[in-house]
Image: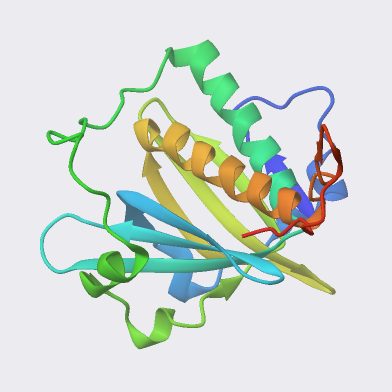
Length: 205
């Protein structure tokens, strides 16, 4: 598993390119151009996270790329994205936030309602697998190269570009999804009433 912060300058603590298989990842022609995303939906499966990168400019809104990441790998992605965002902030300041919802009191749509309004192309249904990522940024955007790091050579399975202002929101969603899985895997011990142990087993919804 390889999660790298791709920097314009070579950092002393970074391995040399020849020592890092991610830096030699093959870029297939069909992903080389990448896609621009204006938002993302993060979902948790039994063994994996699903990130749907959206394009919401024009109609219909659509899922541009679906990326599938194993539970064990996601915390490393979150850590790498956080470090890269911190570096961005140190160089360029706080990224410009997307416009706020003009109707903050409006009821949030259910997942089904969201996907009823999205076009999910057949080729995106199963998504692409990733167990690594390379992250780079300029002054206004971030680039995410999702990798399949398998022998004998790593390959880019999806390339996604995001406006810098979208990254804090994506990071919050990823952290929330990881926290949700961790709570399911390690539920808190049952509480005890003053009169004695509870007779109701703890259930995790």
